[in-house]
Length: 247
Length: 276
Image 1 (spheres, rainbow over the protein chains, first blue to last red):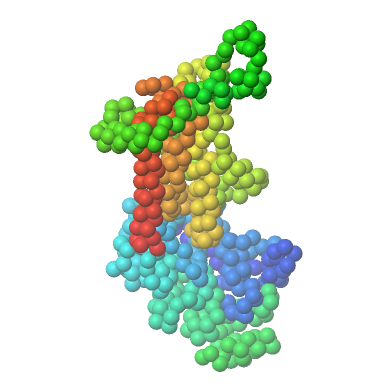
Image 2: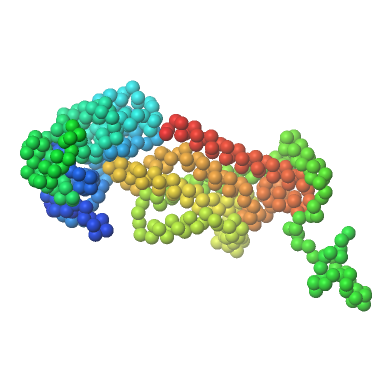
């Protein structure tokens, strides 16, 4: 515990991206991204399909390495040490274990003491409203329950930053509301939220600030209310015009 | 008798050889290789042999039981060894990325078609007195057969494991890396995740091991009561003409292979229902 406390004193955030680019086979997917993400605010990443939103998230999380520029955390994550950030994907990736087992497995990878895992997992399940399902096989849960389990698993790791890549894209409105409530709770517990979404209503409900991407470039980085009512760029205005009729 | 049907070394019919030559040269018995099956008996003999085979199977004939038991023990041991070696290797090959990975995978897949007699020969050379492992003195013992079968099925299990883990890795690698799992932890996690599918891999390996004949024949020697297993016994008894024992063993072997496949199928269905 003492070691964790020391690590916590040097927070990971803010995260700075300096001239970050990523290309595959000479084809640039993302280029010249400069921004800084700070603790406390909920960041929503918006933009049309193919704008590079998911790539940006993966570059931040370290699943991809930038081909140009630099992704820098203020605090350091030691190689081999438990990660201080987590990610939830569009399609939840669950293992052939029980609901509880999926979380204790992740805690094991994070180096949490065996005796502590079960308590932490049960507490995370309770917070995500899944306590009753703890012994069910994870892969036969409904889509909404699976995504809530993925969120509970991420939450149990007590990350400083949580990345979410369109977590409700495949879910119905009821399940979407439940997921949003859990994300709200995770934020309230002190975790920085970085959320990619296509749903402007969700962006308004869950976001404090917006990163707007278009064709691999960061076009705007503003407060959510400002972005939705008076976008600066023509690209953002066109995007909002295209998306709004659906709400 | 149809001696006249056999060909003399010159390729002429014996009865066409001129009388003088026949007087001077003693008549040689026809050269028939040892492995050619005895002349096929008429149909009712088959029926009798079959009935006798069934009697041996269901009344627990001691010779037959000993051979079946040895077969199962040798193959089970070889599968245990091969599984321990091949599964971690196959899984690591699926999740790690290193220089020269593709040639290794191609070679591994090519080894699926490894001819069992070649494996037998290689193991024979290794274990023979003058060979590098000759000091072990295990040639023509069940231990040598375990080694040969393990060598034979290790590539099979590794290649099938790699394929399964590789498919799972495509779906899970981002999540596992996000959770901080390195190649070893990922390989072990996916082996556990695929545990039910991997049982069918083990069963496939067992089926291959228990039904192969070439390798165990060479390194075991088919010694009665010591290294005689189902396949080598069938080969020998057929060529000797002892059809009941050969057929009885054939039935048992068939039943074992069939049972393995039924178990594999049922397991897959049960797991599909439970785990999705």
